[in-house]
Amino acid sequence: MEIDNEDAARAMIKEWGQLPPAAQQREIRHAIQRLELSCMYYEQKGNTRGVARCERSILILGDRLAALAQ
Image 1 (tube, rainbow, N blue to C red):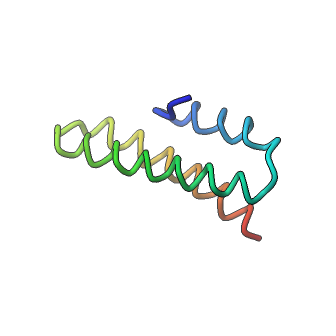
Image 2: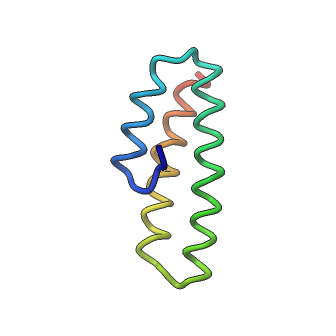
């Protein structure tokens, strides 16, 4: 599933919750990388709403990644 907004990020976190912590961390890191690329694309296109959506999704995933690291 492609993460393209905050709701999708939360849904994927819930889905990944069934995986071992190391696998969750790997999946979240990959999702963040994909979102960063999307963010750069939106920046080039001048789509500020797209950039904001990506950044908020990255923050949600980053929070979950930080929680797993504790």
